[in-house]
Image 1 (cartoon, helix red, strand yellow):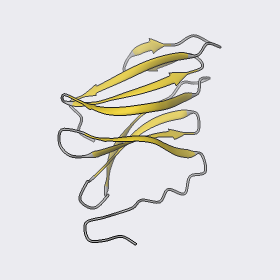
Image 2 (cartoon, one colour):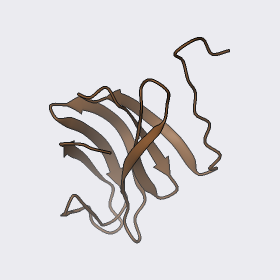
Image 3 (spheres, helix red, strand yellow):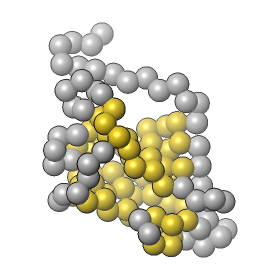
Length: 111
């Protein structure tokens, strides 16, 4: 049962799992989601849960898995791991067949 000013979002995607959540400087709720072989940070309005936008990362032949998300000055940082090669924020990450941990720092977020 939800009380006044509470909200819940139900996602029907079978390949989706929420890993972590954090609020940014603008009080938006960012949820770090594993979506199949990709990683997504999804922004929601804190007042009513309205989706505001998202950021996503994936590689052609690599799986990306989120570990955590935290507020940092001007945005958020997401910790993740990949089992292959991908480009995140314009930079190459990982090697084919090797597990690589990395952090994505997203600043000046506007979903």
